[in-house]
Length: 205
Length: 249
Image (cartoon, rainbow over all chains, first blue to last red; front, side, top):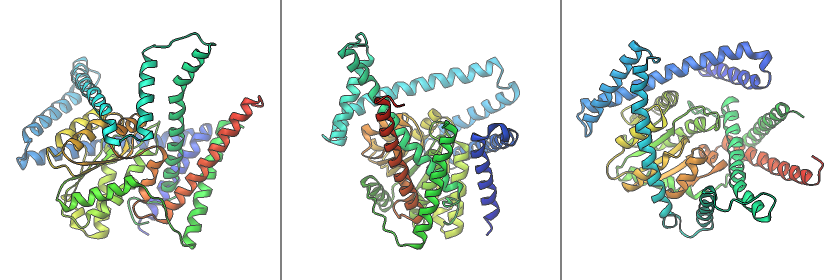
């Protein structure tokens, strides 16, 4: 019974947002208000999340766990960026350069590691999954896509070979659409289950 | 017929079917026969990790509400209670990681709620550790890799919205002797995990998770609704293709 007001509020807001997709003109004022509230709440949740992050590293530091030194560095950098962001604002060129130069280079390094890991994982695909139709099909289609994306077999459209190459190029898109449609239906059902309050992860069914 | 009307029809039909099946299963007995080897393996891996005193890690992805895959964040949260029910008999060891503040807050709320319902110290904050290793996909990766146990990994379950970076998470866990299970991710995430994760759910099978291992009426109603909608969609696509081929559309 205690949860009833929360359920009513969430269902009403959920249904209003859903209706807003179809009646944009009529519900634009209410929708913009709800979206503004949503953004505000998401921002507060983000801050709380950062609090969890700081708490985690502080705990590691206090307990002197393995890797506590890195937690100290994380906390110091976090504080520095936070203070710099608050005093200089996010539009300041120095602040933007500081963030982008660190973030972009770290992300590029991760992408490089990912590329190597991807290659390594591809090589041991058969060892992981065995000679199954799925794994063999995956490997062959990945190889064909790689070769086609290199520009090999580029022929004029209208010829039989050209049509075949175009077909092979379209095939992954067809598969992706199939998976996306299935996931969209699944997502719709999950949303409806929560929206209609049939499924309440935060409490008893 | 406009796309808006089409959208209303699909959503309306899904809501009506879901409600109808839910009512049906409330009054009639049901038998949930949906076997998934991957989910069975996940249960074994979790039990094994608990018995051997190893860590259990649950990653809820890096977005609660993504535009391309809107249901994935919510789905990850819906799966969380299933993981918590096992933890009530254990003294800690489960860590729940999220790359979005809202996800982390909701995860902690759900854990706290289960603690209040079950009065299990295993679910207390010290038992189930909810954390936000990083607020962006790559910072989440950096945080996860740095907090991952260096040896003797237990089980790792990947849920929610994530991309190709999940390959690095899974590789770290597998390299340390852990078991990895995945039910989520974008197309890129699912395809890279196909390379090294044996227990993997792809496409709409991802949404089988909240009802497993113990299927309830809501899950069963959801699965059946999904089946009906999928069948209608397939028929619609085939009929549309034929009509286009013969020049009617």
